[in-house]
Image (cartoon, rainbow over all chains, first blue to last red):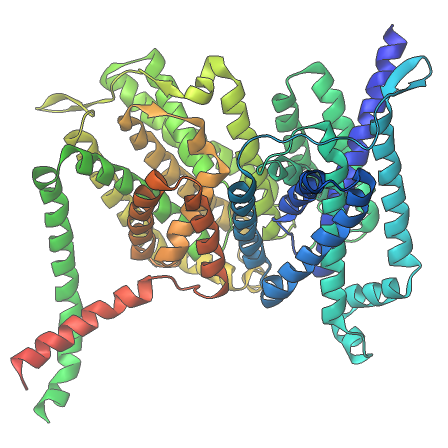
Length: 288
Length: 342
């Protein structure tokens, strides 16, 4: 009995870590590249969940919706970058404010379009899988699989593709990259779009686990931040941060109220910021 | 010809006269409102006056200090909850004094802790914005969930009536319509005086310099982390004072702690004009009035407006309304001068 609880709890931690990674990796990409934090990130997540609602209303198969969602939300992200963020790259604090204003606008437009009521969505499949004598929902394991796939894809994209070379060149030295003929504007827009697209995918994949409403993005935004704060700006930081935040949150939530657990996790993150400003995965000093 | 010669002397004399005139007019309007307006209008004005204090403190932090906080209302709400919880257990003039002390002290202590962990760490200001956002979300949820202590979603009400004891007068209940109004106006005057003193002191100059170029100040030997922490504590104490006085409406609710309220405070300051002392007060009153008109009829439209205001201020209109207001005295002076003739 004790062992089974431990296994179940361990699998829950694994799912939460995967979910946190999926939601936060997009934020890490834009933060690492552009040095700005996108407060509308939670809304891209929410838009992803609503594409599932919309897809179900039109009658599209869930598989198709899951494949189309990253593209739709990614294009929206690219448009946001072009219309709003482009003007603000030299002013990080104003970017914070502008994306926050944008998140309110997106949230409210969705509220007006879809209404405030909670929506549900159908999972790709259901059923349980037996692991070491413990029955566990198969869909949750599917989410772990998606997270691992996305992690590998992002790694390949950044370190093994020709676009990744340009991306890393822009991160290393923007002016030099432009002088070498790299379209830095295009790289910015692409990176932001991909970050938004992954957030949308996360929203679509995670939607069946809970309810869908226009305000669902905010808690995920907060968790993504904590991941980035603790993990640092590097791509590997999302993994380290998700492991740390997901692990401590699911462990603490097992012993106490979820809210108290999130207060504690936030306090841990603040202390971690003081002790290790560059994040768990960061090498040099913190950003000044 | 003679007019051009006389101009410099007039320019010296007029602003001082104008300032005294403005103070007299504002004081007269403030004094006349409870006598003229309906009880509803006076109560609404009291709210706006309290919100003006909050906006002023936000402006000191953001407009002057360049520190972006998405949780400034959290300190307002903490002050309000501290007073309401204290008054639930103790009453009378002594209890009120204790509650007021806690209403200012509790937010200040949280500010001190935040300043120590975030400003003394070598992370950018972006992190401060994120952490305050997270803190506001988490603490609002905590206030909703913990029903025993904070009353949950309903908030707190039915606590003891705040009472002020004055020598020669005795106990005054700060309740109803007029007394809360007078208290709020006096608190705003006090806050304005403090803000004015802060911005004009050497401390204020250093704070503005940090906003413009923190690294340079550090290289000049200033302890910028200490200065920013001091600014945060002062502004959060002011927000706590505003929250304490807000309790005279008779109830406090978790929304006071929340992110959306903090967002609105940023909008007041942004629309009114950050980095000025009048701008935030103007913004709190104008945007607050707009909210009262709009949110009654179209509940979903108001947050949309707040979001659009935000984008507007950040992208196209960083100075806000204040520059237009600043031009008025000169225009008045010009038109008065023109009427008098050369």
